[in-house]
Image 1: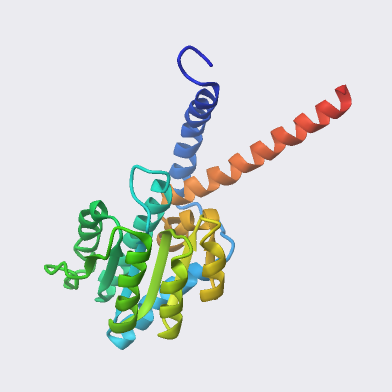
Image 2: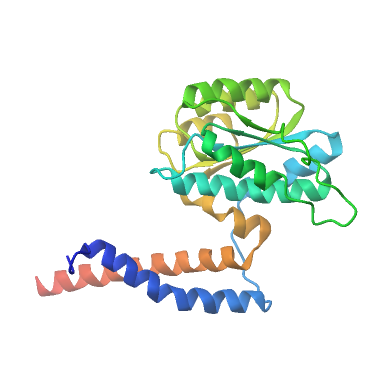
Amino acid sequence: MIGDVPIDQTILLVGFLLALPLFALVNLRLRKGQRISLRKMPGMENLSHAIARALEEGQKVHVSVGTGKLGENTTVETMAGLTSLDIVSARSSESGVETMVTVSDPTLLPLVQDIIRKPSNTPGRTNPNWPTMRNARFMGPGAIAYAAGTMDILEHEPLTGNIMVGAFGPEFLLMGESSAKEDLIQVVGTTNPQGLPYMQLASEQTLVGEEIFAAGAYISRWSTHLASLILQDVGRLVIVGVIFVGVVLRTILG
């Protein structure tokens, strides 16, 4: 412990401060037009396909941000779901497609309402989610109650796509099976090991673990998201290098 600050938090703070200049440099170069190549992620490609099909058939796209909450250990996964919603809503609004959102935490309802009612960036086209907010719905405070309510949405609303990214557990199987039964295009992902097996069963393409945090980089190509993705890869290489050097030194020095 350094002073009143635990050593692990000190290391994280130092690493964050060291990464900031590198993040700013990478972001600046990307904004100036430097291109980078990303490995293919079929789940992300399905997202664009779902919006295109909804436009062709005049139907909606459903988005779930998970059964997590803000301010708890599921905050990061919930934020990834909100980022996915922001991207889907922007794409859908440009195409005139309605976005339907379901949440399990009432405190998230104002956030998702604010996201989907943003005006379209396409001149002359109005946002299909404005002024009505009926497409943002609170389904229930518990995982099972939320899953039961969302199953009804998936089976009875005119949908072509089902995007579910965030904190999910075994309750996902109920929603995933309903989505598969209706032959919806699915984009699903979570970091919860208890939910991933059920996603693999119900969907052909699943975003596993940290892949759910890459939506901004893959779909919107925002420079900040791309820079963050690059820094994550650099961080992994640094950590692996430090571990390798430590193992070698310990072996040599006994």
